[in-house]
Length: 239
Image (tube, rainbow, N blue to C red; front, side, top):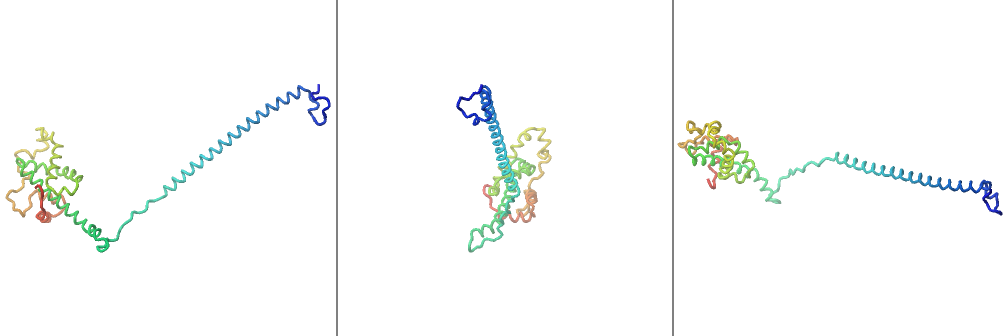
């Protein structure tokens, strides 16, 4: 049974003019289903397009980071600036004086330190029974110097500083000194039979170096005569 009403132009209806009402309804239902499927496909395509765009953006970001890292890896730090120009005493008197005085000040500080070291050892020898502390100072010389390396050079010119360092190192070995068997094994030179070892020569003249002074000069790598000459010009505080 035709679905159209009387009076309609059948030609204008085209192929639908021959369809029944049920066929038209079925076609309409199918068209709605197809429209839903098309919309679903459009959504899926849009999602895929967005995913592709996101991947492209992420790749661009990663590529920029890689390019930055590569560029940074090729960069080289500029060579340190070397100031070869000597400060002028007219335009920069303080700078010129400081630059000239630095080596001299360093040499004076080092000389004061090595003389104070020797003076400290002599003080310990003189003020301890049988000169035991003086000989322990010589025995622990490497450890004492290691502590001194971490001490400001400015205070190493005082013998009291070296005596303080000696007491610090002596504290490290207090257990060894307190144990008779360990003391005899490691510090045999402290036994009465060897009590004269490393004792300074009490009869030596003032201008003759003692054994301690000879070892001190050797430790600092200078001739003993030069050491004695420098020592005569030093004044000690707290010696």
